[in-house]
Length: 274
Image (cartoon, rainbow, N blue to C red):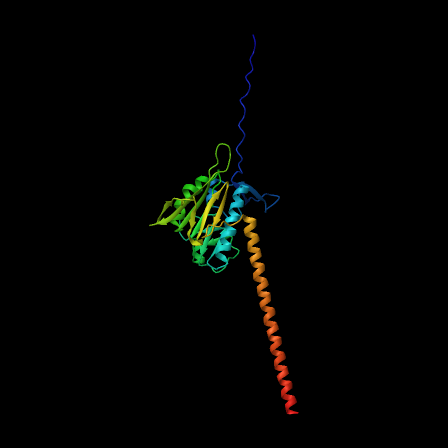
């Protein structure tokens, strides 16, 4: 009799427990009372992060986040209109609404940006006028559904989602969702004819080109990529510093000339008296 040996079924790869990210939790041991254990984050943890959490993002996600932050800072902070915070935790002034960690938020009514790890609405007396979230395939549910309800409760006037709808091929495809607060609830606004969303507080238009976001000014001119925006801001700072140095030099030269005139006048008086 021939014995047929059945091949074992292939084992599916184990799901990465750290796919959302991780945090270090104090777990003292007998040998080390300060031992920290690396603990994987859950989807709920990503929705309501703690200070020090490491949340996994793709390189494209981070590039878009830095670009939007740089453009909005150049647009608003230079004029003192608002501060722009990125990956900073925000604690709301609503008792049963836990803290979030938006990708980008614009907060008017704050004179200058400080080194916040958590922005506390009740302490600062200000709240975001605009929040932008860039979705990741693993955590889209948080941004597309839960945060829509939460940010409306928090009274955020505009919530814009840059939604990464990866197709079966894994290609990045972006769409923009523009929520405006009306009567305590969000209403979804359609993009304009060019597929762009108006960022009200910054008076900028946000669009999509290929697989990345682009901001446009009132004349429809596009801001460059992150590196170009940073370079432009650096050049503006250098020009401002050079202008300030010239002004200081001119003031010093004027003071020297005034002192020379006073000395000449004093000598003339002395000579006349002699």
